[in-house]
Length: 224
Ligand SMILES: C[S@@+](CC[C@H](N)C(=O)[O-])C[C@H]1O[C@@H](n2cnc3c(N)ncnc32)[C@H](O)[C@@H]1O
Image (cartoon, rainbow, N blue to C red; front, side, top):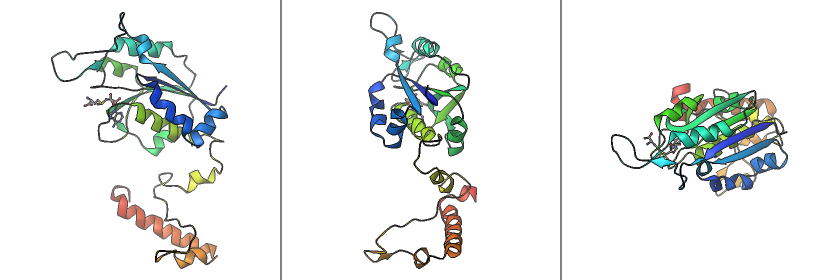
């Protein structure tokens, strides 16, 4: 049995081919750390045309996903004891690292991915949480769903080669990460700060702490 189960309801399962070529995520799939099941909404479509969408009542542009196929797809999924259903919508709560951390202790995330003009309002009742990637509109919920699979998987024990990468990085605490450099020491007149090459660990730590604060103040005024 996998440690973590993602079940995604989508009209475009092929979009998830990406996770088979995504480094850490692909390795987690191969090592059975995660299991990703794609539930093609079309299979639950209505009538001989397997209809999944229809025009909005009251008029307006585009098509909406009907509630019936989404409810049927959701009911077909075996639920694990610690499971949440997330609905992808630009109207949802904007996802933060702390959400990924909270979800990473579950057994299962069921992710409902919208398309077209979105979905019938009654689909919202299936969701434990409505989640947005940010305040902008994409064509579908597939990229948000892949983002969640990616962000949760890298937090699972055993996913990353060095679990310390998780403690030092941006958004783990209140500060963004400090600037990082690798060789060469001088690249096109851009020099690595001397202190990082000094071998003085106390000074390096101090420099990094100052840089974290500076960087966060410059880029995230809202949290410092
Ligand atoms: C074109 S959008 C629909 C937008 C909807 N008419 C509205 O104004 O709120 C189609 C689908 O893409 C997904 N989507 C688009 N932007 C998103 C975002 N920022 N975060 C999460 N999902 C998004 C949702 O699943 C949504 O149902």
